[in-house]
Image 1 (cartoon, rainbow, N blue to C red):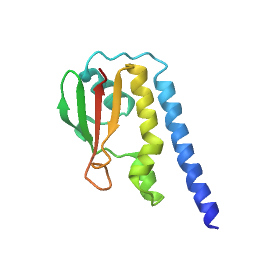
Image 2: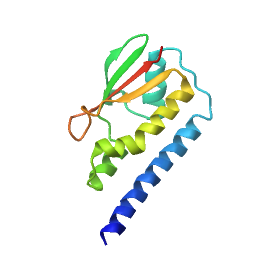
Image 3: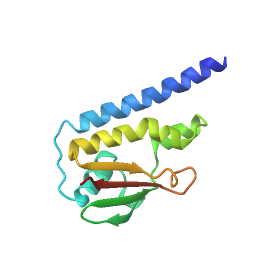
Image 4: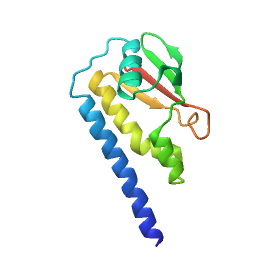
Length: 134
């Protein structure tokens, strides 16, 4: 029985990642180029991820770097909690690859990092850093 449960959980994670990838792929069909980190904030967080401005705390914003802390209602967090899995693992498997893909489509020099020391359900929000690779 335990193997069926593990297989089912694995299937749900693969399915969640595939659905998010399809959404990311469809969203990037319309070319969106970014020329500043303000553009990244607007396009990635408010347009692609559809976050409310009140849920995104901008910790740092300059010409080459954007650091945010988000406290939105997150489907990946919801999935991890429902499956009783570590959010660090679920975010790394489901969300992070798609976020990197979308940002690379916007600008090939953008680098996405999630701070796994500052992530829900361990903290009150999730911290991410996007910067321009030199």
